[in-house]
Amino acid sequence: MFTIEELHEYSARVRTSFANKLVELPWSEVEKNREASFYSMKNILLHMIDNEEWMANWVIRNKSKDYVRKKSEEYTKLMEEYRNKAIQISFKIDNLKSKGQKNHR
Image (tube, rainbow, N blue to C red; front, top):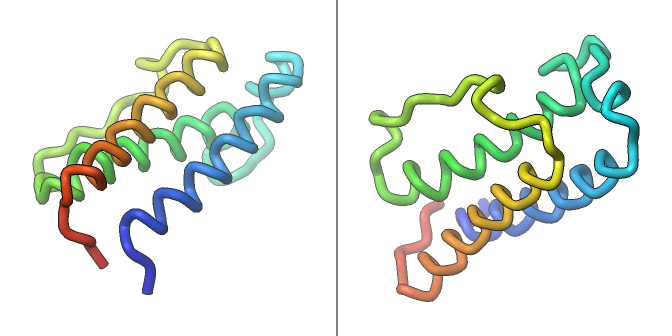
């Protein structure tokens, strides 16, 4: 079983690698419908970031029932901003860890 911190570390590595690759692609390729679970690579990345935000801001604080999922249209198209949002989430997780939050399994 993984702790929430271990899950976040793994998720952050995968998300960062994925985002870095997307930044290298033309926007038309990032937005292209590939018939994947969330259609485009952009939407898959948004889903990854949204899940990390959900964990950092809601699950760890035992408030998941109050969470309202964002629509992908609420995010800007700029990949750099996606990366910045993910970095903010990572900082929140690190701050929670440093404040001695209990490990959630």
